[in-house]
Length: 544
Image (cartoon, rainbow, N blue to C red; front, side, top):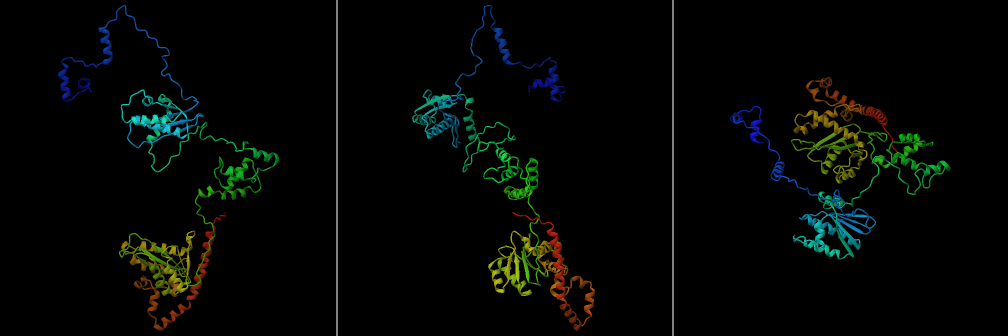
């Protein structure tokens, strides 16, 4: 901004501006904006050169002065082959377009890029055995240099001109013609695309396909049939003579068209049957036919909602006697690790008594699993009839196979399709983790609390048996720590018994252990029946 204009036009100046305004006000200075210099020059010229009385204005006549450009319209049909360059577009005698373009990955000038595009198009014409070619472009420099009319000052252009001239000699006839840029739009578009996009080095881009659309994309129309007949010819024949089309069942085409045709939404069988009925079609087995058809639709199965309802009824299994069947699984890895570095817990559960054996390890290797089976199961509770595990490599090693072959133990695996087959040990894992999570205050000592968690689990009544695992194994309830701190009635009574009386009571308990186990079996069977009825209510059988 002009400083004088700012001083004189500021409404309320302060400081030094106010002082300068007061000093200049006594000279009656008026600030005026300078007018355009162009107008002043014209005024000065007219003032210095006045017009005489005999002056006559210059008269000019331009016919067709409204015409901006005069030239040949090369967009019209041409009897021979044409090639437009900037990109390269080769046009045949019938009007077939063959576009091509190249991305230049070396330093070059604009004129060099024009020559590269021209040479690309000429070579395309040579590969297609074209004899006569009209070469059209919007580069005046290239056309006149190739024809020898203009000199070449840039030494980099000389090899290009010589190459173009050599290539042109291979044709029977060639002609170069200049065209304005507005008539060379397709070639310019190809050059713009190749220069702007980031072309992948190891990929291939298919030729660009340009489709002319006469209607909006959301407007559907009935396509012509391959045989030239209208789409309703089959329906017409059926209504007139009751004949079905050849190589088609009575409802296959109708099913596919309504279910997955132009307006098909892949609806379910019942909705599909109602839609067909509203359209005026009917047969006796329409609902069953459409239900089976939808079940066989590949897209309906792939993109359908995930069905969490069980497809089969529950088959509950039970163990016939204690320690006959064990299930094994691994908890972990547990983060953070314990103070001794243990991260895993190997768990085994007896399917009859629900007795749980568990031990923590740094890593559950094949040898660890084999030693656990030998020491914690076989040597403590006898040889089981079967052991059930998942498909983990450490639970299915050659060491486990050797132990099973040695002791005649059947080793079974739960399938990936039905992992709930080993659900008892999964439930034990969940309970042990929940007990440990509530017992520990410091995560580093969880391995020290594992035996107490097992004791609490073994002395708690299980819903599936109606008794504690300790009672079903030993015939009597275990003494828990609280009974020692605050003596219970059982502790007080046993404290006054003699050795002979204590042995007699213990013998009676062992005698009655079979009855307690039989009660647990009956309780378990009733529990499984209730669980099976509740599970089967949610079953939705799926057939294919």
